[in-house]
Length: 151
Image (cartoon, rainbow, N blue to C red; front, side):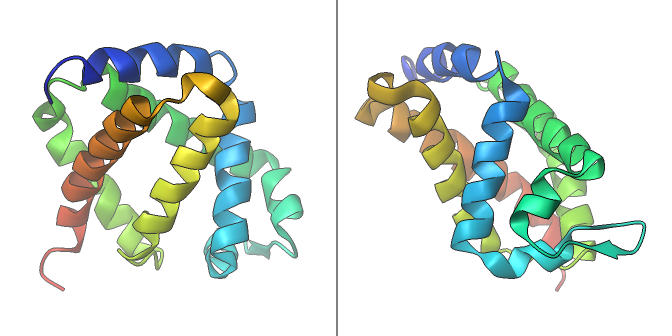
C-alpha cells in the first residue's frame, strides 16, 4: 500500500478506536441488517439468539465485537506489513469456516465496516479514506480466505 493511504487509515482509526465497542456494535447491527442469515451462526452455551438486538446485547457477543475490533486494530498497526499477519489471518479464516461462515459473507462484512466508518467519521470519511479502507479490507480478506483453501 502506497502513501498516503496508511496515514488515512491510521488517522481515521484513531477516531474509531476511542469507542471500539460502540462502533463495533454499529458494524454488526449493519451486518445483521444486510445478511440476517448470519445471526444463527452466533451461539454461546447452546443459546440461539431470537433477534439481532438480543445478540448484540449479550456479554458473549460483546466479547466477540471486542475481538473483531482488535483484529482491525492489528491490521491498522501493520498496514504497511500485512504479510506479518498472514498466518494469523489464515487461522482466523479456518475458524470462521469451521462455524459455517461462507467466503461470500465477507463482502457484506466489508460493506458493514465501511458503513460503520462512515457513521463514525461523518464528513471526514472521504472517498480517499474509503478507498484506503477498501484496499486494507481486501488484503485482510485475501489472507483470511486462505483458511478456505482445499475446499
